[in-house]
Length: 149
Image (cartoon, rainbow, N blue to C red; front, side, top):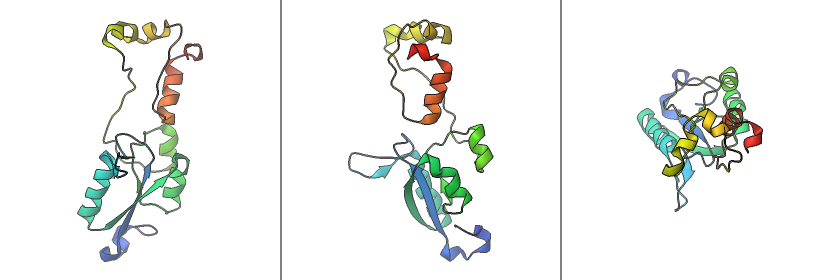
């Protein structure tokens, strides 16, 4: 649908070009067989089927997302993009279909050590594994002072 809004084009010529972000578990990722799968991948296929259009899934870099939409190079971007103030100023975003929170996954016997922000701040040194999504990395940095890294 690049270049024109769907209502202005012959529906028989519609082609949905959906972009996805790499390793965006559980939204879009390659499984062990090398097949692109995930929640947003499934939604993209269903949307294309419902619209009766061919689907093209193309990997893009997060930094390209707004430009790809604004320049008309892409119809939509999927893969669990976080709704941030910065992003909504650059592109139109749908209503969220999923609300996520930042949480710690810890062994049961350490649960109390992570039960509140104050108890986490008391930790002298934490070894954190963080999903490589800039939004979440920044949220953790805001939540915990640099001395805790």
